Length: 583
Image (cartoon, rainbow, N blue to C red):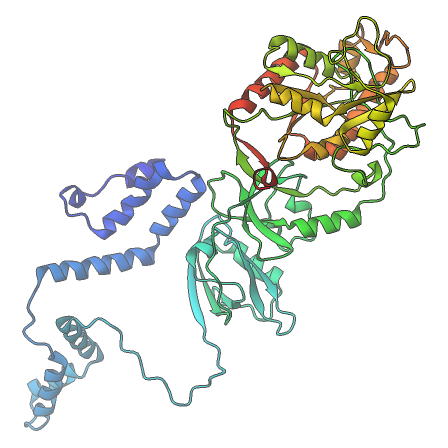
């Protein structure tokens, strides 16, 4: 810190209005310190501007600049030629000690060099004189480029490989935003010949990486440039949502673990390059560090996960078709029924197919609901007994004008105290089956020889009233609801640990579908075990579709978290599938 404070003060010469380039460079890191996001970047600036060779060049530049400002008029522009003429003239004179000493002095290399520099400055001819190109040059000879980069703790941001045909060490990729990329001096395909004077032609890539890892400060590369011309790099504008966790240190396939980018399920990544079909370059959205990291491409990740994943047939979850008015769970056909359970827009895929889905990435875009738009559909998912219905009931009571639920269809007879369109929409069995064939139901099932179902139109009806529709469905149905029309926000209500369930639910009751009257019964240990197991299966298979997970440990705390989530859904910007806004 004391070093930073000392360097932040300008010299007296600067304060007098005579700010030179050397003083400016020395003060620049301290001046930039408030604008630098990380200590790593600040250290890089100190090291770069503290280079001795840079200081020497700047001092020479200042001396020349000062000399030019003095505007001296040289008496001669050809002192070296005059000295040659004088030496030739003296050769024809009788020698004495003075002439002999003068001739010896004029013949000294350092005097000749001094006179030559004098003439160069006097003529203001500072451009170097290159030797003529030799006539017998070999067109096949490789041109060598010497590159010097300053390396701090930051990696160089390039990966290398051994060319299978020539055996040469070549640059495999340049990481966007890294040190090599920012320099603009190293390109994909360049052949490495030396690193800090050490030949690398016969070394393995791992040995070259070790040399680079041990090097600090300035690193000098001798390379043969690639013939292939690269197109200018463009800032990546593609964003993806990660649907799985990734740690490059555990990935045996990644070409360079140090260049990998770790992420968690739900993270938003900005894709910087897709030039490599196997390894994309990405960075975390909003990350101030410009350097990209390697992640497996969508195709590569899907392919290897599909090969690695065994064929799993998961037993379907038990579903309680509760008939509590307005707060019933989702409907599914009985296992005894031979008809296929058909969901909204989709009839061919089975539960077994769903379990084989391989979630990797989903392209997303920022979205914020406009005032004149319909509310987003809110989908609630959770195992039986987790308290989902209680949370939904509390939401409805909190603001009946803002929240709404769908009215389900049924084929059973209307009871005396019921009104059509209030508790249920009562229709005939034939009409129900016709609507099933026309995919008008999101979910449907059979109970006591009667059909029950939630229709697509019932959701549209709630949304048309400018209300937030609270829909409770089985998790496999969620992906069929993810459309431009509904833009669903999916909330998973998760149970706490089984110890907490035993503690908090010991006096609670669960509604049993086995009882004709839907009588409530106390929770059993089997109910707790089933709830935990069901939640684990839901999260494992469908967790990539969840936008929010709320643990219902305490009902009041869970409700407040749910209410806060709804408030943010109205006002904040969220990442949604790009297909929703560009269909």
